[in-house]
Amino acid sequence: MRQIIIKCALHSLLIAGFVALSTPFVRAEDGEALYSSKGCVGCHTGGTLAPDLSNILTRRDRGWVERFIKDPNGMKSSDGDAQALDAEWPANNMIQVPMTDAELAAIIDYVNGGVRAAAPVNIQNDAATVDRGRRLFTGEESLSGGGPACISCHNVDGLGGLGGGRLADATGQVPKANLTLVADRMITADALFASIKGAAFPVMNGIFVNDAQIADDEAMALTAFLSDTALRKNQGALERGPGVEVFIIGGLVGLVVVLFAFDFIWRKRFVSVRSEMVGG
Ligand code: HEC
Ligand code: HEC
Image (cartoon, rainbow, N blue to C red; front, side, top):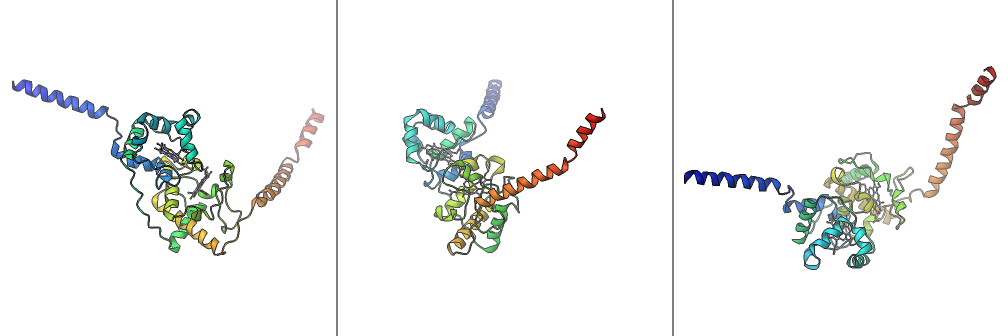
């Protein structure tokens, strides 16, 4: 009898071990962390950029939600509900965020249980924080996650020099390259913080995810910098940054200089070929 009991105990231990090992390592309580690290928080929290996902399973079935998250564009081309939803949120688009099935399940469980309102951020607007934001924006200080400096795609008035990148115009949407007044557009500093932290915009979301995430203190400093920039712009204290003309003229001048330089470097090319032909 004792032996049987010991055998049973050993077997159940083994079975328990197998079950523990074979269940995915992602658990529902990780859903909240994933919701933030995968960038969902940037668009979905606050309900101004995208729908609130709390209790989503009371209005949609789970299979639909899974398919939509896995392939939003595919769904929008074939599914009437997805098309109606897209029409409700014309200003923004759900993006495809790569994740495993276990991560997907954990996120759905988490949001369905009710997304906690992001804790109000106490944005410090002191001169040191604002200045740190400026340095992060221009790349003078690198982002800890290793992501590219904001200035490679954006600019703000008053930075001097040639201003920043213009890639953000290339989406063909409302020009968003110039972030001078973005703090006004976002209405509250919290919304701006959340959208920077979550890299809530399609192009940026692809860049600032996983290891390259923007840290809280960095998003805070950037929010302070952009809020301060909008404030000073509204007070008339900022010069407008250089326009597109500067880039075109600068580019032409650069081209001419480069052409002359090459001409100079290769000035002997005709001579040597000819002398070889004559000599040979
Ligand atoms: C760039 C902003 C953005 C990001 C980031 C984003 N979403 Fe969305 N999401 C939207 C928008 C906007 C919609 C509404 C449909 C549309 O217009 O594309 C939406 C719709 C949804 C829906 C359907 C909601 C409904 O009411 O049926 C789900 C579910 C969803 N998103 C989950 C997620 C999850 C999970 C993440 C993170 C992995 C995420 N989203 C990241 C913008 C975003
Ligand atoms: C690789 C290019 C790229 C980089 C780097 C980048 N962004 Fe963006 N950003 C974009 C694009 C493109 C948009 C327009 C929305 C879209 O389609 O993604 C955008 C939009 C935004 C918006 C919303 C603008 C609006 O008017 O709604 C904010 C705020 C923003 N970016 C802040 C930042 C900050 C802060 C950084 C630096 C940490 C940064 N971005 C780095 C490409 C970039």
